[in-house]
Amino acid sequence: MLNETETARAILAVCGAGLAVSAARDLRQAREFAEDGTLAWSVVGSYPHRCPPAVRGLFVWERYRAVLAVQFAAGLAAPVVAPLSTRGSAVLACVLLTTLLLGLHRSDYGTDGADQMAALAMLTAAATLIVGGTVGKLFLAFLTCQLVLSYLIAGTAKLISPMWRDGSCLAMILSTRSYGSPRLAAFLRARPLLGLVLAWGVMVLEVTFWLAVFVPGVPRWGFLLAGAALHIGIAVTMGLSTFVFAFIGAYPALVFMAATLTG
Figure 1 (cartoon, rainbow, N blue to C red):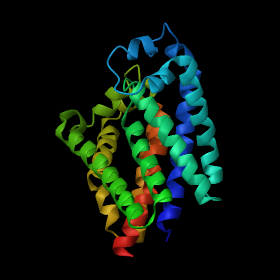
Figure 2: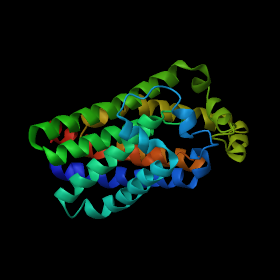
Figure 3: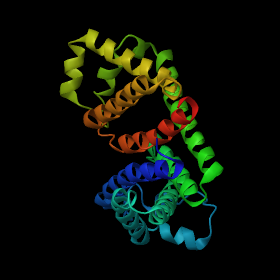
């Protein structure tokens, strides 16, 4: 069983890699952040930002690009440093948390649950590595609660939807421009029973995932492997790769809390 410090370092290693991926994505989309882009500071900064002028100055693209470069470098370093140094891990966690919060404060347009989960995971890692002890355990418990609630709420929302219950939703989602895969959408339309099984598989997993905290080792790892497969499948079919790192990066907290509760 990992102790709280080792758990925090595992969270940092996985989530840090994901933040490197998201920073690289934003750096590649420089045109969107430039003065005539949809994410230009002249656009997203049109509403009041309650922060010091020095911080607002980081949000123009010429400086925000440097923030993303720091996030990219720190994220790449995280999987290397995390197994080697607690102090170095704490520094990286603080750097990544700062760059992520700057990005979220600059604009929440285009952000999603992966960004929010990554921020909470980095906060947990930083607090656990710096303070540790009871405080660290409380943060790990908080992250575990956030993780299982995220799945439970998502699964409950799907259960309410008739399109999820009849299995037609997956083909419809995969037909969209943003998250589409026309070939896979057509494949599922031709096989409605498969779509029904997949949809109910997702819903059942999400509404029962909280059981992973309380069941013994083998069933617990079954839940975690199923959750990982879900996120990897979504990344492959819909391109939402940051969810893989943000949510799987929180799994060490669940494993730690489950071991604490059940042994």
